[in-house]
Amino acid sequence: MASSFSSKIGVLLAAAGSAIGLGSIWKFPYEVGENGGGAFLLLYIICSLLFGLPLVMNEFLVGKLSGKSAFGAYRELSGSNKWQWMSWTNVICVAAVMSFYFVVTGWCIYYMVEAGAGAFEGMGAEQLREHFEAFEGKTLTMIIYAIIGIVMTGAVLWFDVNKGIERLSKILMPILFVILIAMAIHMMFIPGGLKGLHYLFHPDFSKITSKVILEAMGLSFFTLSVGVGALVTYGGYMPKDQNVTSTSIQMIVMVLIVSVLAAMIVFPAVFAYGFSPAEGPELTFVTLPDVFQNMVSPRITCTFFFALMCVAALTSTISLMEVMVAFICEASEKTKHPLNRHKSVLLVMLLQIVTNTLVVLSMTGEWGWLKVMGNNLFDVLNDAVSNYLMPLGALGISLYTGWFVPKARYQGSRVASVVYLVMLRWIVPLAIVIIFVNNFI
Ligand code: PHE
Image (cartoon, rainbow, N blue to C red; front, side):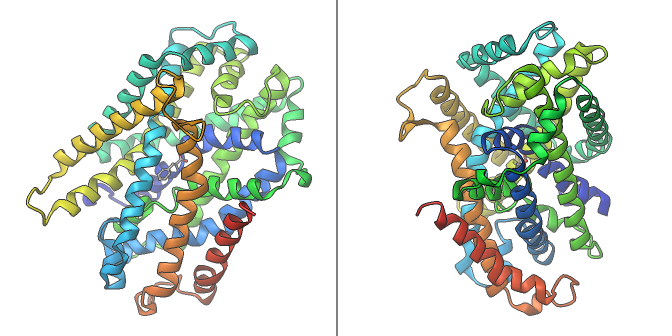
């Protein structure tokens, strides 16, 4: 795959493709809605710039300097086997992310098909909500659509057609950008829409609690793909003269823009059409079809939009699955049963089919006993990933690079500034620990 990225812009787009996904378009709006609006948005932006930036740079650098994937990179850079556990935490975390991410990818594919069939035409808020609830009860349908997502991702990695995906996303991602901007502008002018923007951009600081701060930080890590080794892989593909700092800044700005645009579409719709901001994970899916009702050729635009959402989701699942596939290939290399790329892809697909099926069964209540402390597996994983696993992964990588990678390794790269080291050694780890612990006391 190393040959897949032809240029600097290729690496940037692939990394942005990994980062921009359901996190920005699905998770971000509903978490803003559940956590009270503007103040949460502000915290999210602060976390992305303050912690996200050094961490993104950091992961790119680990990949670039070691030239390895998340499996060998940590060992290679520190020159010690002691750090192998970081690779293991990465792989556990990506497995956990994928176990519910494919379920939501399946929702996107299903909604694209439904929109194409004109299923949403003429539906109001209440009907759209009922439509989603009915879908949530269809266990088999949800499993099949999640599997379609898994197979599509596996096929990309199997045939090594990343170049094709790269080309495709070079065209489709800018289109997604333009459509999001057009929709956000459109939503500013619908009657009652401004209330949504007020909710989004007027921080109510009384809404900030320790849990809200942790969620904002976790969400920023999730949307930036930080703390699971996904960006390490892309760092490994960077040409020697690629500037890590500017690539990271560009990537983060793109993610922030897409997230905020998604919220600027969803919240005016929430207030104008009578949804609740705290609707939960279905928020994007119930509001968007309504947004298209009043636009030109609603059926076509709605279908096209969900198709773009599928592409955004797939460029993220590709990066997630790649971490696990590379890990399995490399980890099995020296054993009696080495697994080549194809076998690893198959294994990961199988594992994901099992875990996503379990998640759906627990979610729809078909296997109602499959719960952790009264919560279904979807909620448990969704919460665990952004509020526990990713912050811990980020803590690990900042301590590792700040303290244990010989400083000499950074010399020669422009980012080895004092500020950067102070951030990695002290500020980021301390902040993560404080935010994390504060949530429990
Ligand atoms: N950043 C992706 C999104 O927002 C999710 C992701 C997390 C991808 C971790 C890769 C690694 O949808």
